[in-house]
Length: 592
Image (cartoon, rainbow, N blue to C red; front, side, top):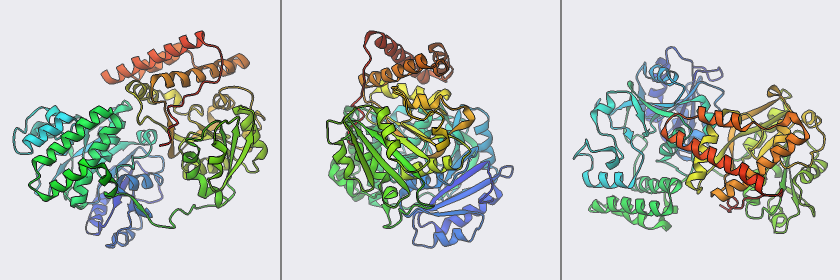
């Protein structure tokens, strides 16, 4: 293990009062991965038992202070910032013991099929017995089945009647699964980059369900390797009545993210029913009362951040951020606030150009410390971009849509990469925010995530950056609808890049009507560019259809592909029937 060297596998461990376990795990890792180069990153959630001191005794392990107790997902996300390009990322609980060949076996399974996105091992408990770590996707019937039969009766019941897989054969053979406990999870490196952060809305519990769902939704499989074995000291992360209640509530939160309000209500009732059957126990009575009363959810354990930990490393005056905004009062503060501290302290120049606004966008933007607001009576994004350029004094520059969610860390990472001079244009990694979107919209974006042609493009990410030399290639922004597509076509593959950092979030439309509006605008922008410059011609419908069909890896992705093609055809037909004009989706602009 070498903290500074390239590695085949980056091992991520999140600790919280883990002094009694972490040393043994690190020792195991020295003997594991005999044919692999490992790089170990430990993120400590400000333990008070000497965990950090134990880790510090190992100079080849990278120790990171999270700056608070950010929970499991939050700790993983901190660690991912320190992960260099790697073949795979292995997430481990600190209370694990790893058998010598476990990582080698998991790595071999991951490499056996490029459709495998993640691998989990077989887990033994402290008595050496196989622990039922495999799980089915949560469902109402599964909750009711577990409530009625528990872990002692009818263990061979169908998967739809349980969240737990108790069948012995499931642990003797390798097979695809829905998800498994997050104690040990090996993830393909490019999948880590594609999916971005773990969902920090889950402080503890259910974060692995949500992440594995995204792995599957992206067209990859989660694979169980029966030959790779780890030992888990169950409960090593601690337990309490509050954490038991959090586990139940997070199951409801997870379902609410991915299902309708009606189904979520039924699922919540099923969870309450399960707790009611065990209400003779005080802990279950407490959990029942919390599940039934949403007002109590805010008092459950959650991430805490130490005051004064948001300091930004590096030099000041790193570049300008230009935000064109047209009637964005509902979301502009959401976009600007994460960048406020960086602007106030002089790391970036934050310029908001309100163009043709008829709402309170300018007033809302001025509430954000560090934001410089410029107003124009003319509603034109290209004009707003050029106005921002006229006002800005720093290079490089980042051009940011006013409804995007992005962190200062991501902004600075892109600016720093552009300042290095090896590329002329760049953007951060991004993901689609489909929370609250309808089934067809989520289906469309699942397919879009699988299209490789979109992965390295600058367009349709809501953000891109240019160095001064790159900007000189075209000078002023032309009067076109698709400015991001225009910029993308100015540069060759080796002149632009996607920076691997915290992904920005491009919030998708909530319904099909909004999606058709957004796609129609992009389609029109592509046609405009092609008419002005034949080298900017968009990817043909035939090529897109071919790429969509190649992305099919099973029944679900086939259905997603059909939805994608159907919506694409509807956009083209609609474009022929409507006149040109600025199309806008307002369903994605709820002030969340």
